[in-house]
Length: 256
Image 1 (cartoon, rainbow, N blue to C red):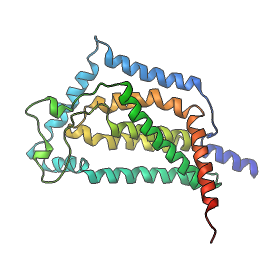
Image 2 (image 1 turned 90 degrees about the vertical axis):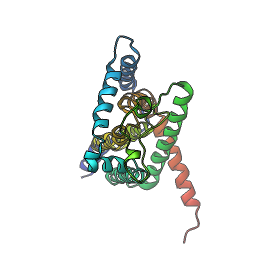
Image 3 (image 1 turned 90 degrees about the horizontal axis):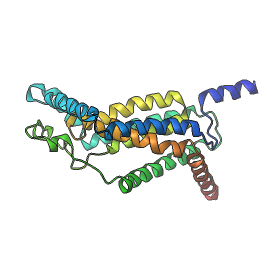
Image 4 (image 1 turned 135 degrees about the vertical axis):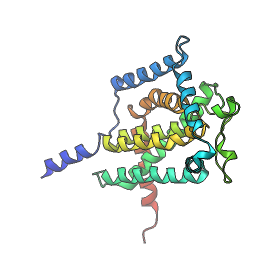
């Protein structure tokens, strides 16, 4: 019975001890480098043509004849939808916790994982801006005579940005997916990936982001940076240290 329990636990959750996987890091980094090459190669216009195709197709749908669609796109670009997105991610996070077969300090351990994820998001955001000063405005700013949902609805929404590169929502959503893969396993990762695509779509549909702001920039950043945090002892070690601190803090509280 003990062996079967251990095998079942291994099937539910990946190995979360600190490890170093140079082969997998290299594969992910090469994929990221391939994306960079496809972006910078002067002979390729792939991303430019794809960006224009996606923008003009989706912007053409934003007309008064498609009132229901306009209202939907405007609604999912309202600040309140960010709360909905957060609740969805929280639900996935709680699902990951519920699948953890090790009951020892489970909530505090996942608290450590969550704090590590937040620290990683801040590190990536600040680090990228320091290393890569490049940015660009959204398509609704670049092109004239386009359909703007802010002019079609009477509530707050977003359809433009003076600095849309990279897509911050996309960076964080893909990072969340990577953390779920590392600490919660393939099934949770796949569900997270689906919602990463769905929840990053609103800014593209409204024209506040180019397609490449998310599916080039955000994806590339995670392919290059996240493996060095998740596939080395960095993230597991940091989360374990934070968990140990949380356990000590809880034990220091006066018992009732």
